[in-house]
Image (cartoon, rainbow, N blue to C red; front, side):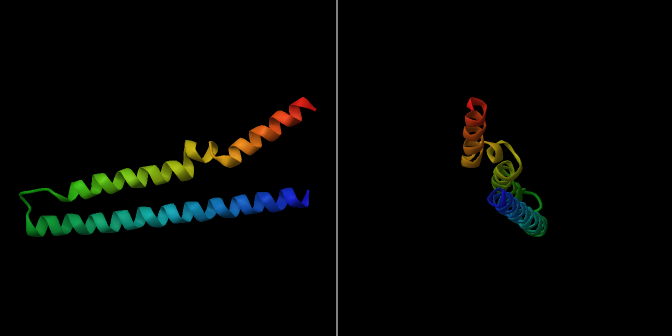
Length: 92
């Protein structure tokens, strides 16, 4: 039981770290893109180029979020191990 508790704690600790890193990524994305927008409006307001960086990086942020919160979180190696354990428990 102690091993299971330690495993759960380590899993929770890892997930919290991943969530924190996602929010740091999201904050950097917002700050940089606000800066790019401001630079774009000052330097060349007639040509909107900042959104290319916003779109490209935004795709990366979405993928990062999907990894932390979405389907990838449930279909990783841990998921496979849990399913194997469930199947083995059913067969007992």
